[in-house]
Image 1: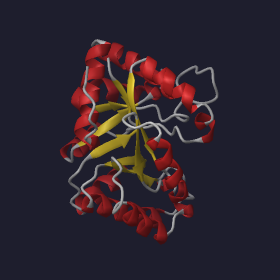
Image 2: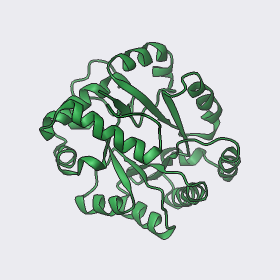
Image 3: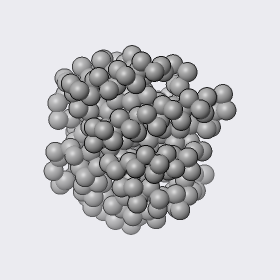
Length: 260
């Protein structure tokens, strides 16, 4: 069985301080790769160096997270373009729009999202998108900029109509620990009814905790529990789920991992 965590902030301090143990445990339960999306330019170097220690297991994406929009500058966009002339992340991310917090500057978010979409287009890279209460505008910006390289909508909680629009643009949907929460009825409905070919697994560790989680933070080790829950909800074997979601990741990010 092969599982891939497509969204894990393993470089965050609460996880990084025990990353050796977490990586060992993750490998032992069938996790074959972890993708770490960036959030701030000042952390890019540390993230890149971290992933170099675990080649063919840790993969990084570079981007500017919309929730931290106040900390981003135009220089960061120029820096991103400069980095991509020397290295090739598997994606641009974590980028997008966040309308949940009204204190976040929407105009600046739009500018940075659109600029990063243009950079991804230029370098023919997929994107990892964070979208909260903003799917309509995210889809509009992707279409406006004729984005062609797909990616993942992290923690998707939009409508089925929006899902169809994303799928037309070659996007897949991150499914994580929220499916273990009984009250998350819409997310659970999406997880069951979206095409299996459109789903990838994620933890968003240390965030997006599992239902009745004992620790104060989420862990990549919980990916197996998420996969087991999703397989049961969909009425398929864990092996079938692991194989198809791995194929989905390989297709999206061009990671050289054999689904088994």
